[in-house]
Length: 259
Ligand SMILES: NC(=O)c1ccc[n+]([C@@H]2O[C@H](COP(=O)([O-])OP(=O)(O)OC[C@H]3O[C@@H](n4cnc5c(N)ncnc54)[C@H](OP(=O)(O)O)[C@@H]3O)[C@@H](O)[C@H]2O)c1
View 1 (cartoon, protein in one colour):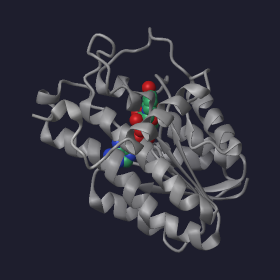
View 2 (cartoon, protein in one colour):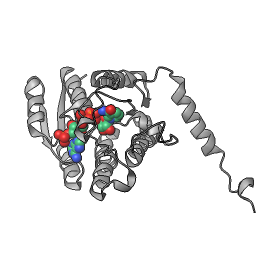
View 3 (cartoon, helix red, strand yellow):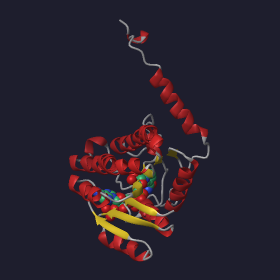
């Protein structure tokens, strides 16, 4: 695979693994993160390809704009919206700045970067847009006993990524642009540790396996890739039920609400 990939959150974990995998396959990179030394390290690992490090804070409009500007007028083959933070804590304790950061990095940045990069892909009739969400996207109905992580905004941001990717798939696939959302479970990266949590005792998937599933899932034509879900038809059943509920609506007030 050759071409140019934009990878956000390329300085650690899953994003760094995407960056390494794509660079080792011969792709040039626009590698995004706040830690310049990590991005420079990545660039020095792959002298055979062009790695442009973009130091940007995706929680800010300026940061998102910097990445969009770096990608402008370049034939981007693949966009990997991966950067993220969770801020696991009770909703009432989530600081406004944390809520804004989370929504900025996990919702606004992927939306605006996709909006900046998709038109070129449509014009060229080819491209891949990957967004890293997580199985927590499907945890909305869970009680605190079932999923103790306080996660309202984070889970919602991942659910947004699923809906965005599914609807964009419908819109962009006729133009030759493939859209995928990746939903891992718990992954062994710096993610939890950076948020003051020790999950080292929890069985975790490797970032390498997540990326292997994503790239294989793209070749299989998947829109939703769940690296750790063995039962392939499970998510299909969820989406079928979503569609059934969507299709069941009517302008008539449902009987149970009638006075
Ligand atoms: N680890 C898990 O268990 C897990 C499970 C499901 C989904 N995910 C998702 O996987 C994605 C990658 O996480 P990871 O597990 O690889 O964690 P990680 O090792 O902490 O990596 C997070 C990456 O996001 C970047 N990032 C965070 N905030 C940023 C900001 N404001 N601006 C620019 N870059 C920012 C970080 O770079 P800098 O700090 O250098 O800016 C880093 O490269 C996340 O979106 C997360 O939601 C993770």
